[in-house]
Image 1 (tube, rainbow, N blue to C red):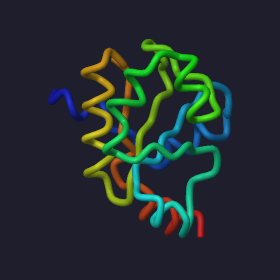
Image 2: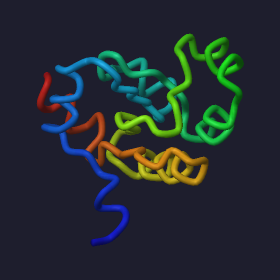
Image 3: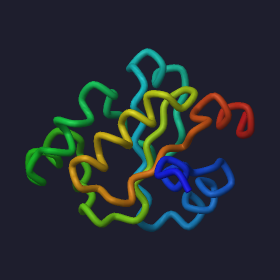
Image 4: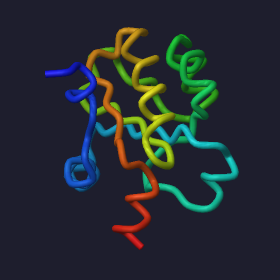
Amino acid sequence: MAASATRDISYKDLRVLLDKGQNLFLVDVRTQEEVDKGRIPGSIHIPVNAVEEAFAMDPLAYKTKYGVAKPPLDSSELVFHCQMGKRGSVATSKAVELGYVNARNYTRGYKEWSEKEG
């Protein structure tokens, strides 16, 4: 099986994680303009070009900048998303390179979410 296949998450799986609501760390990597038009509840906004820097920060700097605790490297519920999947995939790869072994990409992104959630 291709490595990227294991790094993808579907709408259904994301919905389950959101409903469970415990440890999900959902990162929206779209532009501020895109986020202003709508977002997945509970997501935090870190533009794709800032992901590498953000996830390389020390935990205190991260919390100061983003207002939430930095997820641990072994976080099992770290999910990135963009509008349609490409930038989310880039962000997921960067996180994996930094040691976030379980990082995943919501491949159909906000486009699918907004269609299903209204």
